[in-house]
Amino acid sequence: MRRAGPPAPPRALDPFDGVLPVDKPAGPTSHDIVDLMRRRFRFKKVGHGGTLDPQATGLLVLLLGRGTKLSETFMNADKTYEGHMHLGVATDSQDAQGKVIREGDCSGITRARVEEEMAKFLGDIMQTPPMVSAVKKDGVPLYKLARKGKTVERKPKLIHVYEFDLLEFDPPQVFFRLRCTKGTYVRTICADIGEKLGCGAHLAQLRRMRSGGLHVDDALPVEQLREMTREDLLPRIIPVTEIRRL
Image 1 (spheres, one colour):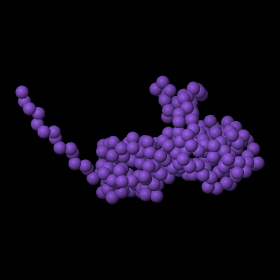
Image 2 (cartoon, helix red, strand yellow):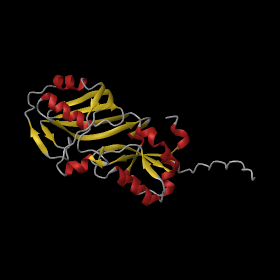
Image 3 (cartoon, rainbow, N blue to C red):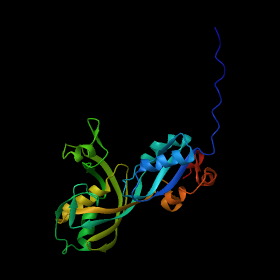
Image 4 (cartoon, helix red, strand yellow):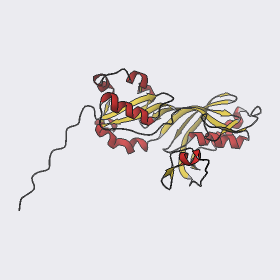
């Protein structure tokens, strides 16, 4: 009987194995940015640590090579967002890209009233995913059903909101900062607040500021990324071995 030899030593880390924080502009999808990395820099394995809606901006964590094994680490990380909700207008997608389904008078809404409702969303809450989302029902993404005019029952899920601060009140705009657990739909929170206020509301703009230990201030603008070479990219990549220290 032939004896098995010693196990092969683990492959040495490639200098391009790691994490690249980028600052996503409004417009492209998260997948578009991943595809850009594959095509421009000839990376075979590229992923990301949490999707941003096309119109959202800010921190998108790209995972390169062995860095793709950190997907769950960043998917599960807490996120911080800054954005603003528009009072007096509700949309079917709960954001500025949707069809207006209701308009209401928000002229009497005060800063104190908005802060009162925002405070109710702190802590553990059960949130029902919106129809315009990537959540699947019987294997079909909800947004595909929504495009056909269908509405199906969705199971609420537990989320946690650590901070929800009103930064500026300029009716009908409400600027805020929110720190929350994974899977939180910020636009749903805005729509729910609009319902509580009686005037309707939607998420007008959203920017992700932080994911886990990474901040958008340290991210590479996608516009700059398009002009870089593979060698230019290397100093901006956080090695896999450094992630645990963040």
